[in-house]
Length: 138
Image (spheres, rainbow, N blue to C red):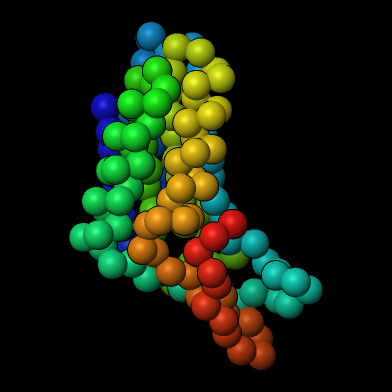
């Protein structure tokens, strides 16, 4: 099962967890990206995320399909938020369930790393004294 979503509303960790929970899953790995309060010593006021939604959803689905081909996973959730997010809010949740932890860990790491490299979602950091678009790679 693959569940992909881009939304302007807050993301729900419980919803993502419920979607990957399964009696056949011996391991669930969850990555939660949060907005931190500083970057390189500068105070972050907020982040702004924009997406080319149609293409972003296609790329997110492609990541999930690649995961299913590479690792024995059961369920994959990739949810990303767009819009203005304040410190502590969640822009991305990735959850993966598998029979064994190694597949869940590896697939989850692959999902976030690949998302940052290939999905057209852009992040602008807004500081007290200016703003900057951040490169998509980790």
